[in-house]
Amino acid sequence: MNLPRILILLIGVCTMSDAQETNRQETNRPLRVWAFGDAHVGTDARKRRESLADALRQSEAGFEWDIAIDVGDNSGGQAVPDDAEGREIVRQFGVLKKHRREQIYNICGNHDRGGLDEPAAWWFQKWIDPIGEHTPHSGVDPARRPYPITGTWERYSFRVGNLLFLMMSDINEPTQKIGRGPLGGNPGGVVSAETFEWWQQMVTGNPEAIIITVHHYLLKDTTTATGEWEGMVKDARGNWKSGYHGHKPQGTPQGASYLYWVGSVPDAQAFEKFLAARQPADAPAGSNVITLWLGGHTHPRTPDDTHGGKSLIATKWGVHFLNVCPLTQHHINPSHPTTPLSRLLTFTPGSDEVRVQCWLHTAEFAPRGWHAPAERRLKLPRPFHWEQP
Image (cartoon, rainbow, N blue to C red):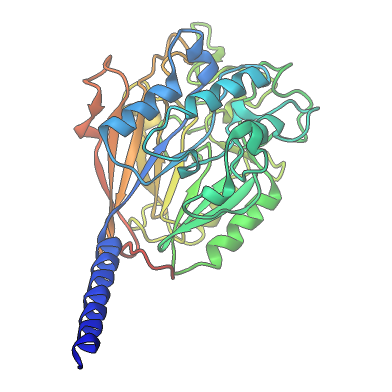
């Protein structure tokens, strides 16, 4: 007589146990973030290489990842990007088999900017489209994002557990009269005063989060070749010429390899001053208000390139700075050949370290795949976990 009720209770207990086990497994699994940039699709396409598609295929065949961070420069043109290259980039994103396009979070690099007389970042918004406002062109559906975005194409954020990602796009500097197109490129990094103010508010307003800042550029004097004039080289007569970046005399070449303009102030170092005011340069790792800064722009010659006495992964003011590019093989100065690479960041629940691995996408420097000498374990201010603070 009571058997049906007993069975119901037993079924309920089993169902609850299954749900608890599923939840336990979910909160114990690692988060794997694949970070890449500087595909310069149009440049490699002219050499019949699919820089973006090839990297996507390698990632799905070679390792697991949950989300990806793209630090910009999908376009390879020295002039303003065009629709034909935009369609090719969307086609190459389409090779994904195990992941959705919306699992990749993008920002604008300097090669993705439009012209000074064009609508702001029209090409980036139309074809890369992080907010999902131009789905018929980009194929990005904001409803399919695994972690929703808050903000605009120029600056947005999203959360994964107690990680907070602050994504800042590179823009045209409005005080410059010659930019992409007529100048043939303009390599100095730029953010607006509004973006810097937003960043400060997000950083100070989320003290319990592990904050990861993403911009196309690294900060001054942090990683390889981010010092003043380090993007250039001198010729036999002592004149500056192109090095890692193109020498554009009217384009602030002295700051070509770092975030140079903030709020229309040249060599502003606004982010640097903000971080330095909170921690000295040699502060313990993971001790500042942000933990990681991911960028690209400067294509290293090798995975251990130390130009300027700096490395591709460096810690300053208690912040870890990571150069995570490039995917391109052919968008280079012939005197500075580059090594296509990307990085995988693994956050393990309960651990206050992040594992950073380096994947080589070609075999010229070393065998394609994981490059063990470049692996690092970086200190976090607190353990990663899946629950939001």
